Image (cartoon, rainbow, N blue to C red; front, side):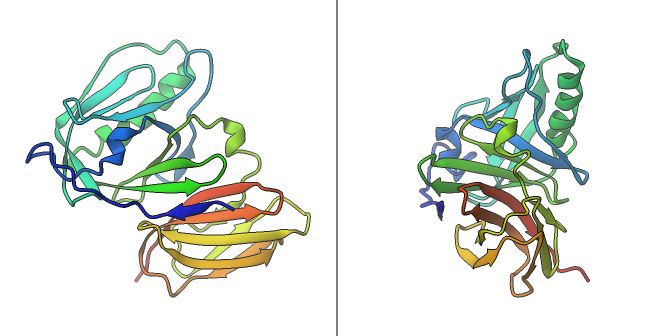
Length: 245
């Protein structure tokens, strides 16, 4: 089973304007694998024109660069140390036509995730997974619940489609359901990790069609749900808990 460790945060001062951005952001080449915009989940298309959607943070200008067919780039500054940033002076974009219309549509959705929120604060969290295929995962979050998730390697569609369980509702208040398409009875390990890397829930269940989790004791916030089957299949799901009035 994968073990997740909280990051040891190190203060990085490279100038007074852009200090206290998490150093690990700069050390890793990130690749988008999932995003949610207006309650719709998107995965990057893969075809002859588009093999990945990279994201790079740099300690020198431009501090932020991502691309589909075009590139989107600009500068950022820290808001809260090691947890959030804002864009400085907007973003710039190249103007190249995608040959594949599917890529063009996805690029519009992805770029607008940033362009429509230039005045918002983006919070971010990094999770370290310790396993044979150990990896790093980055999540960028917006106040409205939209998010973009990245890994330190390109994940193919087969890595997260087809063997996924359905988790709902998300955001949730007190109760969470895990729906499985697998009708085989086997043990299912369920672990919930906070954005700080702390285990806040851990239980083992028989893998039923629907597993109900009572999570009223969790505080509002961002979490990661880790589902691990006996077969070795594992899924990491971004969760948001909200205490609705």
